[in-house]
View 1 (cartoon, helix red, strand yellow):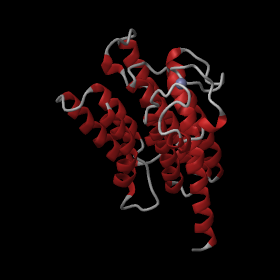
View 2 (tube, helix red, strand yellow; view 1 turned 60 degrees about the vertical axis):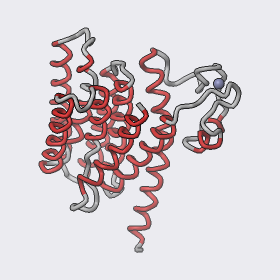
View 3 (tube, helix red, strand yellow; view 1 turned 90 degrees about the vertical axis):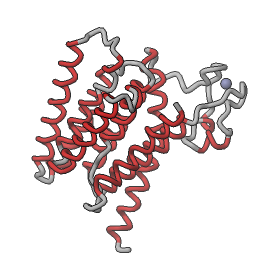
View 4 (cartoon, helix red, strand yellow; view 1 turned 135 degrees about the horizontal axis):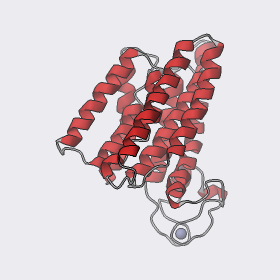
Length: 270
Ligand SMILES: [Zn+2]
């Protein structure tokens, strides 16, 4: 293994670990945003006994395993969803970083993946994700893409991402203007379109075409009643993760299959 591969491996590992921590933060975001609570404080607490958690009860995945999925004091079961979200986000960060060769741009796609997880899960829970969540995440990603890709003169990537995000934003706004009350459950999942637009806009034709085909298939499965709306929302979170990897042949199927694993696991739990 030469030094390039070695350093890339370290970057992928670091991204995966960062993803575990970000996943832990996303659990907080997904719980607090729909309830109108601040995401910056107070520290995490048990929703059953309201006790504030110590730092060692907050370590991603490890704490859940060590506590055997129960609160230390009230022994209430802690959903397996928490460690699954952490693992899924960690895996997504590692995959995306691998796909983008550990460049600055990979950080932008990590932000997009995290945003997609947050929006998908809020809406999977049957709440409407504020457009600000998608907008803030996509905005941060666009700044990173501008810096990372622009520095290397990859302006097609910058332009494609901006246009894609703008198309997504217009689509969401139009759909929301049509039914502003948003009591229609079919509305759920729409704000993921902003993130999706940015993501696919920067990827070029082939991944975009594959993503679009997958999306249509999922959509028709829902139309036929094979999948419910909530399942479609979760699946669309996976579809967006259709990225590019270092191996062209494995490119789309591998990344999308792995990215779909998390929402499918959530669906299986119901
Ligand atoms: Zn408790």
